[in-house]
Image (cartoon, rainbow, N blue to C red; front, side, top):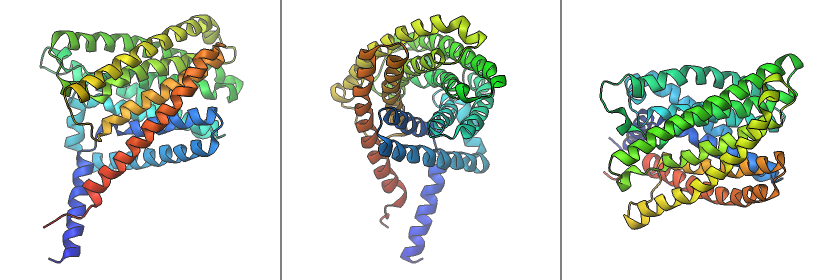
Length: 356
């Protein structure tokens, strides 16, 4: 066999392995690039925003195609993900990624695409919202279940709040007959997301207090706890801005006040999570290398920035908006570093020539 044939065989084998082991949470890349694109657009950096929108849309299409291919070629592996409490909740990144992309496209004037993606996301939210908790947690014979709780479970809450954000973002442009329905979807999804956050927070806290905490256990997914709180702030700010509808009128004051409380808690979580990263990587010397879970860090950084900008504008809180604007550039820097790590990882694992 010649060298060219060896290279083709090697690439094919590595590509097959990559598809087979694709993590369900890879749509966090779409979430991260999309929400930072939203923040840059809000601040008037249109060219940078468009560049990240291109990354957002391209990553969504590529990961969706690879996920469909994985389902067709390796259904047993995907079924195993649904049974694994450490990976199953990653499927909710598809919902959040769909809505983040839709929301950003709506800002560019593609409201019809936003509405279509919202329909897809709502259907997936309803189905996965019952299937994943059952297959990964409640349907397992192994007990206690709480020992498997981890930060990725907060993506369930993020998915719910992303539905609220997308519904609220297109409500002002919808025909009058649809505004009340969109307001209902936004408020219900926001409320469900908050209840889920409380439940997941209890499970994860019990896990951390009941079982030993090893440096290897504090994976990047724990940053989603802050991201889930931040997207609750953004969803609340968007609901406050919605036109008059019975559901919104009944909850506007509650949502506005609660959003300030949630932003405060997300701000409190920020140094806690940074300290956990310091303890993991600097104290215990766990190597900081690229892994798909790192996008679960970038998304919360971008979401916290956008939530602060929106909340500051909706509730007339200039200091909150200023903090969001400053933190946006931290998210951009972290995004570029992680993107570079991902590209190098793809080169090393897929494209780099292998030695005999």
